[in-house]
Amino acid sequence: MKEIKSVAVFCGSSMGNDTQIIEQASRLGEFLAKKEVKLIYGAAKIGIMGEVAKGALDHKGEVVGVIPEFLKLKEVVHHGLTELHTTNNMHERKLKIQEVSDAFITLPGGFGTFEELFEIITWSQLGLHQKPIGLLNTNGYYDALIEMLENMMKKGFLKMENFNLLLVDSSIEGLWEKLQNFEPQMVPKWLNPERS
Image 1: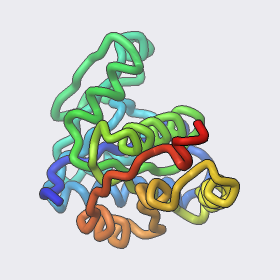
Image 2: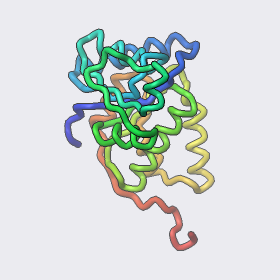
Image 3: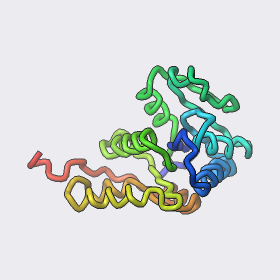
């Protein structure tokens, strides 16, 4: 596993109502800054996204935002970023984030956050990248998702090896250790290719 110098963080543009989630988002930004790891994220100044960025910037961290043009026009962009990249659309945004990141961490969020998480896992499953993917399960936010993934395995829609692509921890330090120790394994996506 190569050294992690940049981490993409996927998370909500809403703040939510759980103070533990808000506080841990800020602490993650601070943690990355103190490790001198560049934060890559969706460039917003609002919600959990804004908290992560603020946590990093307040501790002299490098923060890179990537945002599609149509969202930039909605005036949600954080103007204190180290770098800002503008893309034509959402797909280009996700591709750019994947290209410039050494690892990924997902915090609580809504549909957009889930979509980013599942796309980056799918890209790994298909062999398009071999970077570690972490899920920061703050205050049990993702317990139901993990249970659903376990049910997918039970019902034959997900291999254990692909389930294990998602590194889960409730603490920043614990998740960071898992990201650093991640060893990619190429596993065929299809469970029963002869029956496809």
